[in-house]
Image (tube, rainbow, N blue to C red; front, top):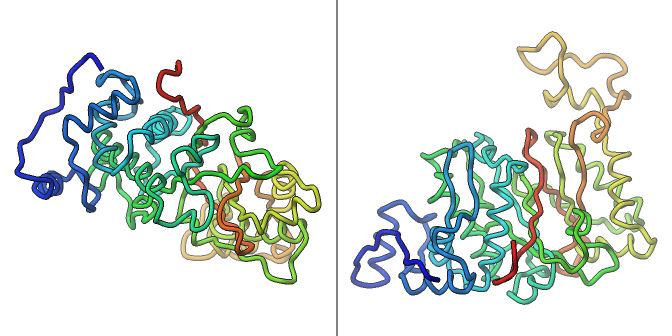
Length: 360
């Protein structure tokens, strides 16, 4: 690193005073931080082999950018190791890609992105893809997600009182929603579904509307076939908002096993979901999700004769609706989770994770 760090430096007595100052300034998410001393920040930049003023991502809606220095400061505060930085960089590149339409996280519905890491880097830096994959306990998952969150808050004003207007907030922001996919399977990884060669280090950013724990699915003992499990997934996808966008279905290894035994691919499962995820017009009307040509006020629209047997197919009726499949979690039960997207505008974005010294 040839250029010096330019951020303002504050003299404090000790690490506790540094944390108190960060809290007072509104720089944190409410949790303790690692003080971002000049030496720690410089070490992160040296590991990446970048200059402090290199731009990591630009947010054109707000006319703001994220420099490597600011990203490193927030990553130190989050508790990251330097070797996590390539993942943080790629994730921020994905979020600031125009296709992702980052501005949607300001919505009153409190969406927050999820991230799936593929490639050998996941194991190298200790990202969890097994037991308790969505929970706390693994430093890499938690601090990478936190670094992304702090960077967005401190560099792009993505905070309550700033651009974010979420009525309820999203607890997933605290854990970061960063996972690695299990690739010890004949199925192609998510990165390959997104057009990259297997073995490429990538991170995929997906818009999510709500905590996926709200759509947890457990395989009942009498449902043991690939088609039966797919029907359960299609039914869950048809519930709730029935919104357009890219839905990610996350399967545990136990849930995946019948598909492997019956030689279903990810493409087969996605095709089944496209053909079978549907909702009756009656159910959509009762949920206030069926469009009324004349507009409707005053409660639930009238359910007309035949509406119970008239169906709207998700993938056929909604623009940009698709299903991505990933495998992660412990092999201790047949569980699946559905990540439902914010329905207007954003698309998933996958970026290559470049190791230090690799060309852009």
